[in-house]
Amino acid sequence: MYTVVIVDDEPWALQGLAEIIDWNNEGFSIIGQFTDPDEAFEFLCKKEPDVVFTDIRMPGLSGLDLIEMSRVKGLNCEFVLISSYEDFEAAQKGIRLHVWEYILKPYNAEDIHSVTKVLSLHLEKRNDLVSVEWNDCAEEILRKAGSLQDQLKNYQTMVLYLCSHLCEVPEVLKEEKWIPLFVKDTGGAYLRVSAESHITRLNMPQEGNQKWGASRVHKSRVNSLPQMLQEAWYALWAGFSYSGSEKVGEIQFYLCKNMNEEFSLKSVAEKYHFSEPYFCTLFKKGTGMSVIHFVQHVRVHYGTYLIRNSEKKLQEIAEEVGFENYSYFGKLFKRYVGQTPEAYREGSEGKLGI
Image (cartoon, rainbow, N blue to C red; front, side):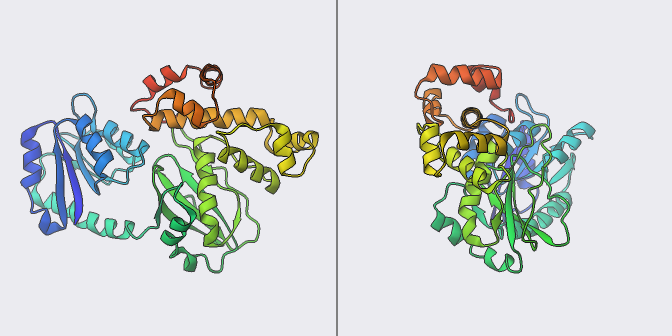
């Protein structure tokens, strides 16, 4: 039984949609009805239903705002927009947000039946996707992703791409395959596998609030997935790309994983058996920025992600990304982002990206 939430500021419309068909007979169960979109959003975050039917025009948050906020949270819901009149602009924005369907009032039982029929088929197919969280333990990820092993046969290399919002897979080359995954708190995830022994990461379009992050290139085997998830996650939310140099890319990943720890140039250089001057030169050549600049960039940009997507205190976030001195964090944050962490949190509620 797939779960449904209905959102409409008009009680009569809410009741009408709930009673227009036998939802249980269609394979759906209504688990929530809301006239207040703010309350609806809280419920969606807790229950994450399969489908949400929402009116577009409502006081306060609109249906489109509700969808946008849900996408930022990485909720894996399908949305059906309902409108009292043809609204081309809203419909266009709905397309960009990948809403499932757009229904005009007044609708009848057959209209809703047609939507639920196709939705059932889609949800059945969607639920077959490998579903993981980026910070699951390796054993859990491999357990969930075991079915990928057969799909990776006859391919040599792979790269994992994560997107901040719902996105479409790019055109596929003949010798490649893009395998969709579901990664919680992202808008899209694709494992790009190639029959070639060497592939170059694509520069994905960073349009508006839609951001991409890509892992390093790995051999095509499912055991690589846990690390690839972490690599792509940091690239996406800390806002950087891995170097084409295998060693420099490895160091970038190490610095991200340990961003909350104190370390010196000397200690990192020694870990990789380099002299400090050679290490700094190698890193700058491979990334275009100094080690210190890269670490600051990663810490601040990952901090923006945590501010937008968690309710942690700002002091806690500063410590999580490696700053024991909050005032120093605030100073660097303003230099990179253009405003203080406090102002950023206040202005980021209900908004997308940076």
